[in-house]
Length: 331
Image 1 (cartoon, rainbow, N blue to C red):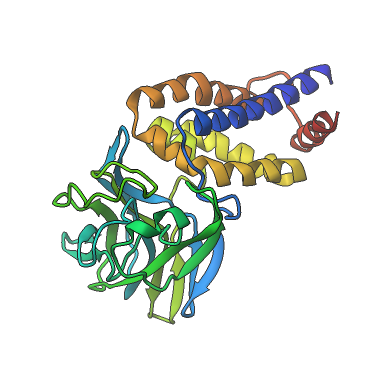
Image 2: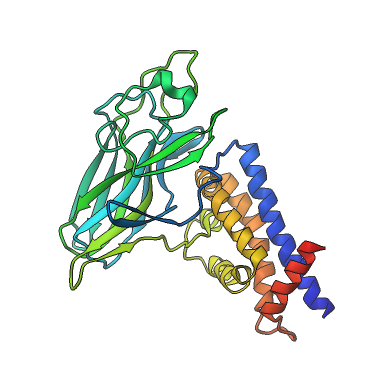
């Protein structure tokens, strides 16, 4: 029993460390959470089309980070249309008509379909209602498809927005969807010195937060798309892939232990709200990615993996660990 309690304590301590490190990274590198009012994998509908918000697919150029291309695999799926919730970033003073990015859909046969993301046409700065940025506004504000209440980068609360686009496919087996930051647009007009936010002129970003496939055969249906990483954002960024065996260990612990308790569910919800921007920042810095992998994720995987050690003399009962974690938290 003492050994079980020791393991439970170590597991709880490991996740406290994750919480501390995530918070520390947010503060140290000034990484901003999109909004505390948002929930990972929010379900909503736009024009009758169901979406699950929170995909967090980004291509961007900002301080110390250059990720010109990002993608999500869609192997073997066949759809008539792809519905997308997207946005632009650091684009407040970019004028109408500028192509800021591209969405490419690739098919298993080698063909592809491209949609240009045009500011003021089908995309817009997600924070165009931020009070400090109104003096730099240089394009048409599009009607949003999804909005949330936030105070990111501002002294005031305002509405953040995402926008809707769709792509008619060639009705072939899909391979993957690719998001590209337009390479031709390297600088934007300057803002008045008195206008905030004061971002460098070469910063720019595009993102996708939800994808839904529309399928007509044999019956019409909508299929929401989610990455294989399934929420293990920081671990996926640290290992550079969502298919690492270590990430499978973390998923199993989340599903079989954390999500079976109130405390564990709250920890998972908090992690899903705060970790995507942290993971995005980590993925753009090789040294930081190595440090997070070796000093944080690997030790946590080792501790969690010990719970399911096959060759151990003892076997920890999962439900007991859940009860013990809640008891330790209350104490």
